[in-house]
Amino acid sequence: MSYRDLREWLERIEGMGELKRLNGAHWDQEIGAITDLARRRPRAPALLFDEIKDYPRGFRVLTNSLYSLSRVAVTARLPLGLSKIQYVDVWREKHISMKPIPPLWVEDGPVTENILKGNEIDLLKFPAPKWHSKDGGRYIGTGSITITRDPDGDWVNFGVYRTMVLDRNHLICYISPGKDGRIHRAKYFEKGKPCPMVISVGHDPLLFLAGSQAIPYGQSEYGWAGGMRGKAIEIVPGEFTGLPIPAHAEIAIEGEVLPDKTAPEGPFGEWTGYYASSVREENLFQVKAIYHRNDPIILGNPPGRPPYAVGTMATCFARAGQIKAELQKAGVPDVVGVWSHEVGGHRLLTVVSIRQRYPGHARQAALIASFCRAGAYLGRYVIVVDDDIDVADLNDVMWAVCTRSDPASSIEIIRRCWSGPLDPAIPTERKGLNSRAIIDACRPYEWRSEFPDVVDVEEKLKKEVNEKWGGLFSS
Ligand SMILES: Cc1cc2nc3c(=O)[nH]c(=O)nc-3n(C[C@H](O)[C@H](O)[C@H](O)COP(=O)(O)O)c2cc1C
Image (cartoon, rainbow, N blue to C red; front, side, top):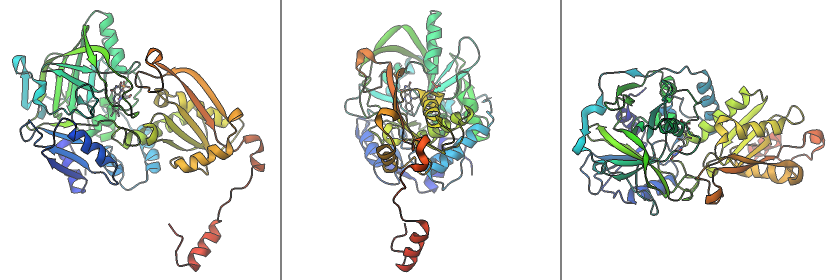
């Protein structure tokens, strides 16, 4: 069964036994703490907070929405019940074969139930959490999408970029160098103009998924989300900017980013597990209108320390699926598995397994996985292994690194690569560029047939032993 918006998504998830309702938590760190601790438990449910301290009943916050494979599957319209590695493939196949469906303009939608303008504008009306103790403020946008239009054309982009509340009518949206929204913003600033922007801070988690994907420059996430859903996303025009606002959004904030006014943003506990971007001056977002449904819901996806980092399983298998698709598109044969590890916040550690076909095959796979669109930003390590290694099992992977690689000949360092202020290993004055290590942990191609045999219990013997000992050793 499909669903239409966040409200129907919640009904669906509750029916699956994957939603927990919590009343009475405080927006100041308590929602963040519960969210963080809940992720560390197996089968973490989605959490819907209501009756939040200082706020009327109905003004809610949803967290951990995509913190299970089944919830991601429902959201991306994928089959239920697969393993995470199987999801890499079904995601990749859908991502490649899916045809984008452009969004559909409609006259109005639930998001226009309340429209606040002029003196009515008050961002503090919404229970934006302060997620972690050292965060520089209350972040209303962590599962949000920031919508901009290319001033040189019609292309509308949206991306997930964190957004901090400054006061009643000012926000700050942090966009890393190189991201599409930042390029749009720079183009307006170069013309001496403010950048029109809409930030939706509550919506169908599918829009969050779309906004966190590395969709190629020039293509709209709206089309991608429509294609994944099999139906156009309905949009309404913002009164001041004309930008397309999801008609079923819970809360959308419309305004413009000013080229000549800044304020400090951060620090913010990020997906690397650190407050690495510290405090910087960022351009101010001046609010012109707030649109919201009755009893609105903020969609929160606060980061945290890996492996509980990004608040969504999907970013791991979506990134892995996209890297696999891009390897294949680049003509690398026999790529068997790809996994972007949770412990690296789905960016810093990617493992690729191949069935080696020719000398240099492993290096080719490693370099392309490091620098393709989905793998380029803030990567660190790419490890290539043979296809007998389970790419998602860190013990298996590190066993291959320890036993099949020889550091002097198996590791390459590439310098001056795309990083950003969030990189904890780079000092402030050098932020922006980092290096990459690729580790070839395959059996060396030229003498692989003489490589020592693996110690293991053969399948036939395993079966015999299990039969004889009453299944004592079966998993
Ligand atoms: C939970 C979450 C939070 C994110 N926060 C930010 C952020 O604050 N700033 C940023 O530039 N990218 C952030 N990202 C990454 C971007 O959303 C991602 O790179 C996306 O592809 C950007 O869209 P774009 O390619 O259209 O620029 C975040 C991703 C996730 C999953």
